[in-house]
Image 1 (cartoon, one colour):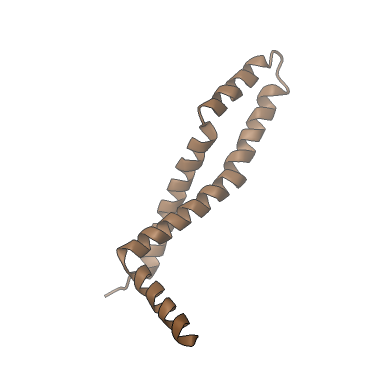
Image 2: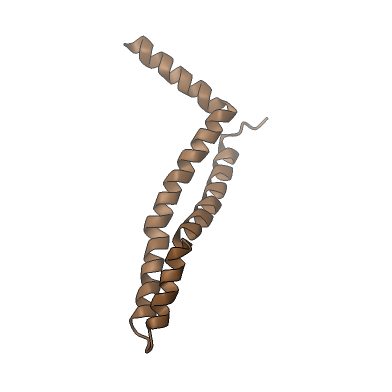
Length: 103
């Protein structure tokens, strides 16, 4: 059993040292950040926008129409992708700066 665990760990270490490992880590980071960005940044923002447009203004039918079109055009998914890509870029560059060996 310890031989199996040791071989699995050395295989994972070799994978993460290669270029494919960098891609895998980047993809996992992006997926995690995409979910977190959507749940904690974009969705509350969309809910707040919807409440402001449909609730307090007189003649608020145009606000609900605008929100319907924003949903149809997948505005929330576009904002999530943009914010996640920016955060992932900065995170990967910061990790790369820490993990690169200095000669």
